[in-house]
Length: 102
Image 1 (tube, rainbow, N blue to C red):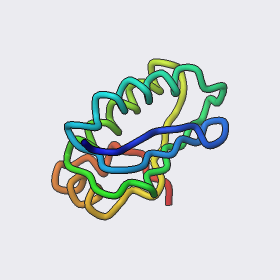
Image 2: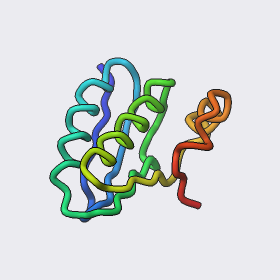
Image 3: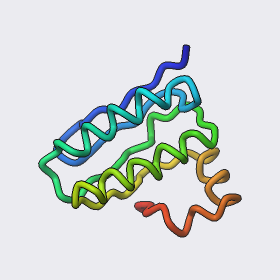
């Protein structure tokens, strides 16, 4: 079983960790949507520095979290996107729409 988690480290800062794949994604999807909705912050950051490995499922999660944040009236940016996720995003043309922090 894949081990992964999402947690709010401080108001509006979420840590995404572990292996992002089809096994871990459903629970992460639900938990992340819930965390974004109840967070008091209007501007949020998803820190992906703890992601160990990701398939394209990880990028689908990022896009879903962006939609969740928007639906809650919040903005979401992504920090520390791992190299493998960045490469997949580049091939898919997603680097233009995922708001990456420098």
